[in-house]
Structure formats: structure tokens, C-alpha cells
Image 1 (cartoon, rainbow, N blue to C red):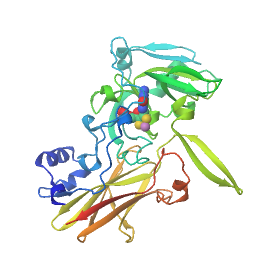
Image 2 (spheres, helix red, strand yellow):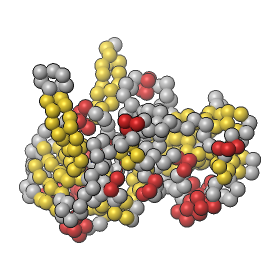
Image 3 (cartoon, rainbow, N blue to C red):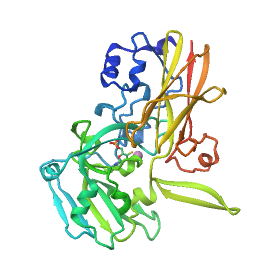
Image 4 (cartoon, helix red, strand yellow):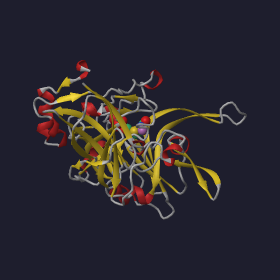
Length: 383
Ligand SMILES: Nc1nc2c(c(=O)[nH]1)N[C@H]1C(S)=C(S)[C@@H](COP(=O)(O)O)O[C@H]1N2
Ligand SMILES: [Mo]
């Protein structure tokens, strides 16, 4: 194991200290990062363009994820957009259809929010770990923009279109086969779209959005899984029907087997709000003791507990909540004997609900990998 036990470099410690955030607690000189032995496999070849830039939790030095450590998901392509010709159209069932340039958008009142975004595929597949980040987003209030456009009485749904597009086929190989090209899009009911936290966002951690994260403008919908945060935004459309494009109705659909009155039903629901979750992030050896650092997110986290091997659940120290929509870091000081150990964490919300174990029926009966919020176990080998 010696080879894998990397000494925390002074540079890493410096960054963590400067940000003044929770991980700084582990950045004491002389701390030794103990590598996990269950390193996730690399992203498989066919998905390497879709999933990029995963930063392992143990390599994250700060509560805010710096832009160069953010993951990027693109299902079709990563468009390069000229900000001079970019436009945002607001149309459909609105009294005053509008087209905004980037300068016009930026001239509207600035609003900032810090929120954690997790891809709903995170932990659903072995390679898919830590597809999550936390950033401060700056932009314009979506609710104010929609109010200015004037949603008509018969509007029920707001659709957000990205510029990126790809080929889709309905009923492949049948006489009803239909091939078409569609933009990436997601939608939500008007009441959800009017959440004052939602942003038409043009800055990430104080810089223009990186191209891979939606330049020039993306939607930020705090509390929702990543997929709802449409990047490379080009059009907002108000409809009097539900929108059911690929990423609402076919892909990013959670299929769960449920027993209702002795009958089996398949609950098929589109990926929605982030679920209660936590993860052990890293283990640091300090003066003969071990500190486990991790994070917890989802709705109103009240506590985090940690289990080592098959020992009791022990309460971790939880950092203060900084915002309703951001992850919270937690820490546990413990001793570990030489040999292999399994570290599991679970979050508990303010209603007393516990993040489910991997063998809980709610996880076992989930047939697709989206919304995988089961407890995460990591392994170490103590020399
Ligand atoms: N236009 C567009 N927006 C998109 C996507 C996409 O493929 N195209 N992927 C979504 C998914 S699945 C996730 S998890 C988040 C990831 O945001 P990030 O790439 O900034 O990390 O973007 C979402 N927004
Ligand atoms: Mo995602």
C-alpha cells in the first residue's frame, strides 16, 4: 500500500486553507492521504465523449468545486457557441414573446446562488462515481424573466432547449419507425419553474461558464438532478401540454418495481429532485489516528452516520449548512487497525428518513441506474 499512500502536498493544503472550507481540516502538514483500494474503473470507451472530467472525491480540496475540476456531461455534442450571435428565445404561451442577446441578459439584475449538482447516474454504474460538484452560479432570475414575458393562463409546462442536438429513432425496426433530429431538452411544471432560486446562468464561480458546462448560458435549477440544468440554452417554450422528449420520457426515466395491493406495478418516473445521499470522500492519517471526510446532500440533511466494517453507526460531525441547496461536509475521527476495512456512510434528513442501504427494497427494486442514492461503501487497506 505504501506506493498508494500519497503525502498531501503543500500546494493542495494551501488551496484548501485559502478557501477556508471544511476539507481544510485535513490539510494539516504531515497528513497522509490513505488511498481507497476500490478505485472505480475508467469511463468505458463508448461513453468517453459523454462523460468527462470526473474528479475523485479524494482529489477535491475544497467545498466549492473549482471550474477545472468540474465533471461535464454531454449527450449529443459540446457546441462552441459564438456569444455575439447567441440568442435566447422565450416563446409559446406567453403574452410577450422575447428574444434576448447575451448583453441584454447580462444587463438584467444579477442574482447569485450556490448549489450542488449531481448527475442522477452517479453511482448507478461502477465507473460513475463522484459525478457531482458545487459552485456559485450567477445569472438572472428565471421567474422574473417568465413574469416579464407573461405566461398565459393555459400554460402548464416550461420546456428548456439546448443548442446541442442529435439523431433519434422512434419504434426502430417497425413499420412505424421514425427518424428525426432533436435538441437536448428538459421541462418542468410552471410552479417548479417559478422557484425564485432558478437562474438563467452565465457565470460559474466568478468566471464565464466554461464551454463544457454550458457557455454562454445554462439553466440552474437548485435541488434538481443534473439533467434538469440544461446547458447551451437557446429556447424557453411554454406549453399547454406535458413535454415528453427523450430526456423526459424515455431516457432519464427511473423504473421501479412496486407492490400495490398484491399486484406488481412498474413505476416509471422521470428523474426529478435530488434524493438524500452521502459518501465517504477520503481518509487521512494524522498522528496515529484516522479522519474520514465526506459529504452529504439532497433534501435537508440533519445528520450523517458512519459504519466501519460491521460496527455500530457512529455520528459524524456535520459542518454548518451554508445554503438549502448545497452539500455539507462531515468528519469522523477514528482509529483503524491494520488490514482491510469497509467504510459506509448514511445521511438522515430532518424528517428522520434514512438514506437506504444498498439491499433496501427501494434500491433493489429499482431497475434503472438513475437516482441511485443507496449507501456507498469504500474500502481501505491499513498498513
Ligand atoms: N444541453 C444539454 N444540457 C445538459 C446536458 C446535455 O447533454 N445537453 N446534460 C445534462 C446532464 S445529464 C447533467 S448531469 C448536467 C451536467 O452538468 P455539467 O456538465 O455542467 O457538469 O448537465 C445537464 N445539461
Ligand atoms: Mo446526468
